[in-house]
Image (cartoon, rainbow, N blue to C red; front, side):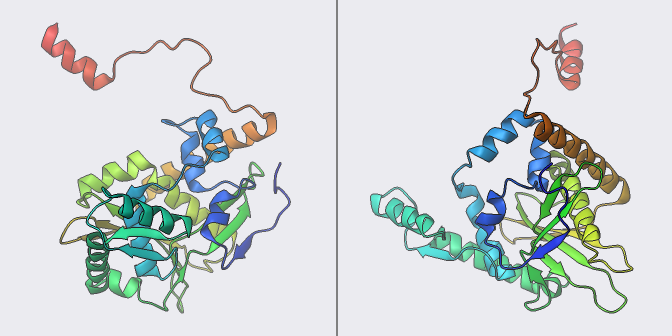
Length: 285
C-alpha cells in the first residue's frame, strides 16, 4: 500500500498546488468525498481530472492571504464586473500567473472582513501575525489501514508553556448563527475534518502532554462580517472520527483492488425521503 512504511513528517514551504496534486496520500477533503453523497468512483475521477479554480473560492482564498499571510497573490482588477472582454482577459491572465483575481469592490470587501477579524477580541489575538504558522503540510500513515494521510492546517498556534496546541481553520459562510453552523458542519462533514486534523497532529506528536484543540473561525461574507469561533463537542468529534475510519477502509480497499465503485451496480429500491412521505401522506391520504 502506498507510503505504508513512511514515517510522519512536516513539510514547510510546500506550494499549495503541489500539496493538492499529491495522489500518494489522502486529505480530509478526499475522505469526505468517498462517503455519501459522494462515492469512490466520483472521487477517483475528480482526482484524476482536477477542476479549474472556481470563482466562488476567490474571496476565501484572498481572505486567507490577507489574514494568514500565506497563499496566492491577489491581483486587484479595476473593473466593476466581468462583462467586458478586457475584464475577462485580465481575470484569465491573473489566473494564468497563479494569482487570485478580485474586482475592486471584492477587494474592498476582503479588507473589511480582515478588519473585522483584527478587531475581534478573540480572533484578533488568535490570528495575530507572528503568533502562528500558516499552511504547514503534514503527513503520517494511518496505523489501521496503512493509508498515507495528509493535512494542511490554515493556522497552527504552537503550544505555549503548559498550554494546548491550537489548530485553526478559517471559513467564510453565508450565515454564522449557531443553527446555520450546525447545519454547515454536518452537511459539509466539518466534524470529520476536525477529527482528522486532530489525529494528524497527534500522530506527529506536536501536541505534547495536552490534548490539542481544533477551532473553526467562521466569518460571514456580508456586513458587518460577523465572526463566530466554534470548537466542536466530544460526540461530534467521535462521529467525525468514525466517518474517517469508514472512509479510510474504503480508500484502502479501492487502492488494493483497483476498483472504485459507484453508488450501486444493481437497481435501487428507492422510497421518498421520510419528510416528503410524511408531508404527502398528511396532504393526500
